[in-house]
Image 1: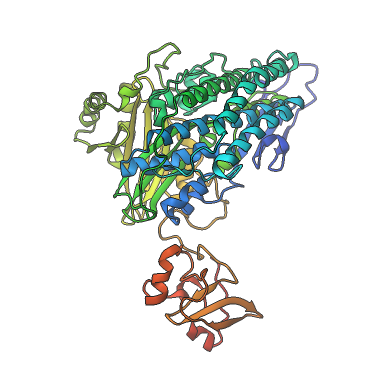
Image 2 (image 1 turned 30 degrees about the horizontal axis):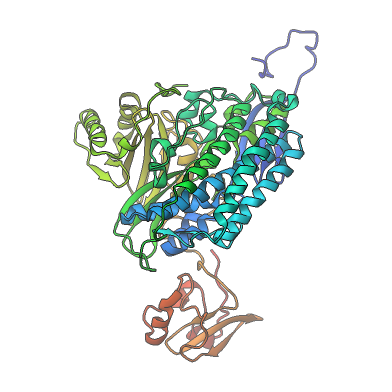
Length: 380
Length: 257
């Protein structure tokens, strides 16, 4: 075994012994996308062992849920995966709805789909842009954030907040679309599909350096992906045909069919390509939803003090990073008895030591960036 | 490594909306008869909203049941492990997905509060590693056979298991300058100067933002408490000063666990 330093060497370098080195990466490192700490054991340039240390951003979100009324939950879950708050809120609101056995009006479900898909584009833009930055390409991140800014502006128009939207309510959404919002959105979608996305492809997809850094790096085979419960673009890039919007459709996805974006590559480049394809797919979904946007009310009449009946439920949505789900127990009071949040980043990060073992130190950031974790979602 | 077989290929037709249909769930219920057989006793099953089937397995037979679920029934993915503190006992809950059949199964294991131990599923599902560590971190449930069972989100020196219902070392909401009502007619303002707590008599209904007692949100119902005094707990247990304490020279310093 190459890594076994205790084995006697028979080459001319027999007198030289390589020593293991411990490299501490993070928690304050720009490429870890937050406060992740990796303790790497190196043999020369090769990673022998990697121990992720997480929890620096742990806010006790599940305990907070237990001490806040159901109404206050969507505001707190915004901060879990802070790059896709709309999708988090959909998860929380959907869980309480499933617990109470109520169905939001069709218009509300379509609005959730539209803002959810826009949020997916925004989240993937950050993922792709910062991934380029990690690998030394500094232009994509600027262009990505430029486009993302337009989405945040639209969110501000619809919900009043750019980032922590607090837009979903149990039984619907808070506000209807403001005047002229649909035109703005369509203009953005046209521009994004015709100009921004091809530009991004031009910058990264055919880029020789980018391809060399990502192709064949960090390979995950489909069985590994299932065993480690990977979901989202990470699993779909390994050929796992699993997308909750298709497999167990919820909300408006029961009416609007999604084309699952799958690739068989399994490497960092495949994961990047799946994100790019999903952005194009999200644009299409937004268009379909806007074209078929039904009228009617945007929320059911539900009391301010929600008291779901005693019981338990498990509700999962396809977040930008994979399956985001809540397991919730109600004891019939105004506060959730238990709300377990399954963060997709937390579960996806688990495979990192497996992926890094045996890879070169230069690939560590390439592999970590391709999993696209959000530390707020890992630590919750 | 021993991994799950039968990975669904890209072109496979996936039953989507059918996942919620009764026949689809009946198929799973019929399949679960194999678990009954293997365990030698019928496991309690129930249908839940959202096309989920919930079963309950005795703690000592969890590994046998999980092996059948993975190898025979085709649950390839362990999605989620959660704990729950039901006061008289603890629960460890597993959510399993079968992608090829599009099933979602919830497995519940009841454990005694005092000595909660259950077999680890890491050998069958590698994903259980961090998920079980998190549950151990929050509830103190020991997973036997886990290769690396230590705290994951909290500090290694952390004392206690925070998601247990009995865990309340400090008041959940502590504001030094908040006004705390100690009785129906009296309130304590929390401003501290040289260890002394300043007592301010307050009239009922004075100030909208008064906290009736720390740690609970008061919203609109605060008005009810303020007029009737109902629901006002003895604040001394939260570490705040009470009238008697102050008269005898108490410091009123919140005790931090």
